[in-house]
Image (cartoon, rainbow, N blue to C red; front, side, top):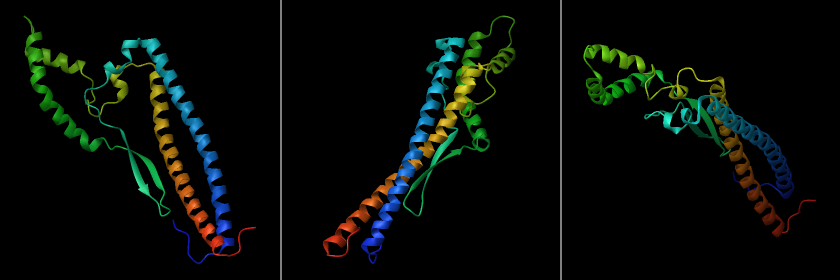
Length: 210
């Protein structure tokens, strides 16, 4: 944001003071939010450690991650009139793409599942019975839109649910921190632009700031 050309040194100095106060307020708020974010991250990892202790290290690890992952939230950026960038967390509408993902999963997995069922079918077992047992053992959610908690089982401990909620809160707080940092950076650039303007006015022999 460039300063107007017709303003005098007194107006420039007054605006510089206002920007400095705004930056100090934003920095104080940024420090508070960063402390809260660090606290959420520590609490989330502590809850994960409790879950690993209760379920076992191999039961809560990357080995349980779904082979198809779809983000449940996305980051949307927008630019304000003051050239500031705002970051907003938008939750995905899972109802619309769910049918498409289900149909895709069926097409991709029908071949391997049939082969597995033929190998598992023994004497006295029909193919329909094997298919019913295999369908019962599968989770209700599709891999693309599955609740990440279901990767680790249906009856997960409360500490794992708490870890999920904590990290979800951290995502929204991280977006607020990024927006605040963009606001501070924009104010800093505007301050340096006004500072150059002030030096030009002083160099041309106009009255300087008291």
